[in-house]
Image 1 (cartoon, rainbow, N blue to C red):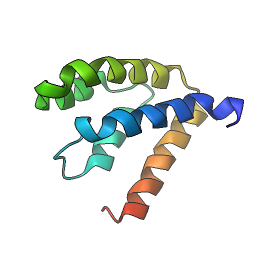
Image 2 (cartoon, rainbow, N blue to C red):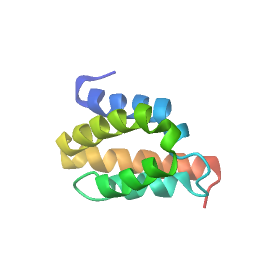
Image 3 (cartoon, rainbow, N blue to C red):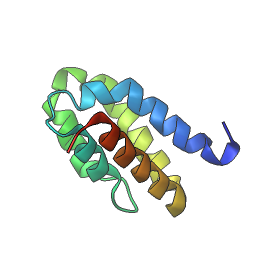
Length: 97
């Protein structure tokens, strides 16, 4: 892993760890992820709505989600775009619309 991509890899690792619980039952999980990271700042309000849907998981997912939000906000714009591209590519490979 190259140093410039380390923050992106950490975000992806956390997503793999906590994403399934956070996005359980969502018909379009990639769209939910894109909503969180579409702008220059992580959409914490939308994230809290996702956490509220899974109260039994909130104690575990909320701290990680807020940490991911802070990490995303600290990324340079080009790295944020790279993350969005990764989500879009994953969506396309998974066959999601």
